[in-house]
Length: 130
Image (cartoon, rainbow, N blue to C red; front, side, top):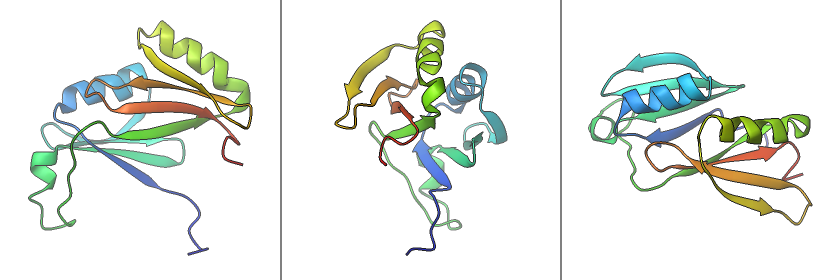
């Protein structure tokens, strides 16, 4: 489907919405679009949206269709090449442990850290995948 331009939404399944809001909004600074404690919290992340759903609530919905997941999920945030090292420094200054760093074949690197639920987050510089 060549018409698709990007992934607009990414979804995580989170048990503790208050902790998710504190991490993604208070620490990382993402704007809260909508928040219903115990149900969901949506964040604006650049041109995309991060959806955090309580899996016990979302798996019983009739509309939108039921969905849920568990375990450590993964996605990456993209930053400009110029901002990459400042972002890495800021994550460390926030007291968020960097769990891994990878040097890719392209010569660019990325780093990983976890949210309070254990989800694996990554920061990548623009152009990492061409």
